[in-house]
Image (cartoon, rainbow, N blue to C red; front, side, top):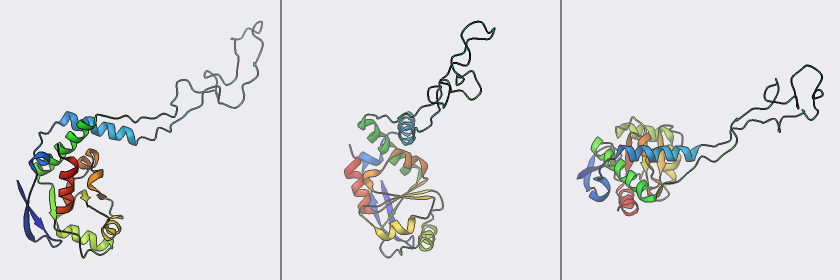
Length: 207
């Protein structure tokens, strides 16, 4: 499959052939969902916490004697049954992260790249040379490229101007080919590559 290469003014300057081993993978929705859930779980902070009766201040003295008062037995005023007492079975800090087999993750990435191709969501930009490190200029360039939706820009190497220009645009995320992941591919409608980043994606994520 061939995709046109455009410059920053959205003018065709050539064509590039997509690698069939990366961009013609069978889409498995169940696998993609599984990887997205795993990534979201790994991003959870897991800092929610409540205090049990052992962590609530006070309650060290028995409120009244065990027998003879006519009242129910009580050992602490910080019992979960009392107002101001501890919490029973509340959340405690924990690590929600887990891992999946690397082959499954790589397969899901190739499947999402193939889905982007089928949906027409991939645009190949010749290069970002001449782009000023200004948000206003970058937004104007996105408009010229017909990129009005959420956009994932994959760039090989350290492009300081592109990084500065895109950092304040909330709907745009800049990644290197090595850090490509399923969650970002699902979360962004358009994928923007350069020929260099495309070659790196094929090198890193091919079978």
